[in-house]
Amino acid sequence: MSQLEDLQAVSELVRAGLATTRREIGKALSLRSTTVSELVGNLVSSDILRENTTPPRGRGRPATSLSFNHLRLAGIVIGVIDRTLVANAVDLTYRVIGKQSITPPPDADNKEMADCIRKLVLATVEQLPQGIELSTITLSISGLLDKPNSLWCFTSRWPKLKNLNLKEALSDQPCSIDIIRNLDAELSGIQINEKHAKNENSLLLHWGEGIGASYSADGVIVNKSRGRFCEIGHWSLGNAQGKPCTCGNHDCLETVAALWAIGEELKKTFPSLALNENDVADQLSKVDPMQSPVLTEGLKQVLRVTTNLCKLFFPDRVILTGPFVQNPLIFSKFVMAFESASLLDNQERIRVSVNSASMQDEIIGALHQPLESGLQRLVESSLQHEHH
Image (cartoon, rainbow, N blue to C red; front, side):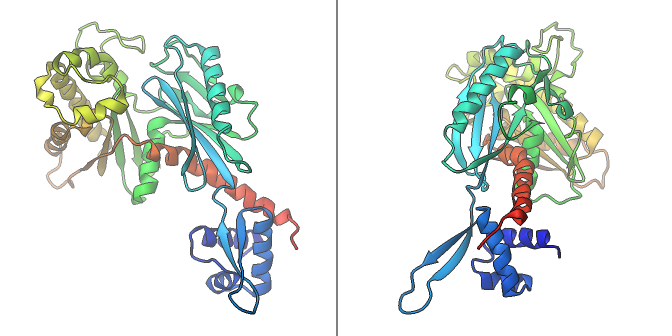
């Protein structure tokens, strides 16, 4: 192996908790003690590894142990909940070490949105522990993106926003800036956390304030590098009801099923219902959805679109997210719909699961690649460090 590969191997070994001493590293990697000392010296000089000394109990040399510095780098992910931007700062274990939020006005244009994002980042950076280096800011956002050019092209939540250049908006930040579709980030995080098989096809459906999907074929998320895919919430129902949608068209799926469209009507059946994704999930899990005509119709249309998606993609598994699917009866309707939609007698049954509203999957999916790249750069730069 090259010296760089040895450095990476030592770093990963200590990070995984598989070695805490030079001797254990040498044994695990079959390296000479002088080589191990040099590699460890490089990584300690770069503050990737920390050396801890324990005083001896009697005579003899003090014992030293090595630990990985999880607070060496931080990443910030900015997500969207309802119509609020939420920033989470995490360390290299994805532990949240800072959190801030801001609610842009509904009619926010590019300038107002850019100002809100800058304020949000500055407030979150202030919460970072001293000595930690901000490696990346990733915006995990809804709507249509132009990922290669870092453009937020459109979102129905802020209709006046058009082609906002997010790299330019955060050009004063000395770190990498990345954007990703929020549902792609969530699916990516689920794949990492649940260790999905590489040859698995997965469909993620979100039904909440908006409606959308993400799909991975053979473990690779489709169109992730472009930032636009599966905007099923804005598929036309062709029902000639003339209901206006936030996207500017009429009679989209969201007009009969999204929380923004049916929330007020839902309150007629369930008066205490909150109209935001965070609070409504728990409330919806305890009601009889069939008591509400608007929810019954919304479920019917979402099921129709989703079962058609399954005939297009033939997924091995479907992951349901958002507040509506937390209801056990609604979840069972999805399971039954997928079973009856199978086109082949010998087709394996689709595995259906429901995920909670936690942002942890989205955070990991959005930050895993940029944070690992940042750590890789640090390890490479440690080659240049002198140590004694």
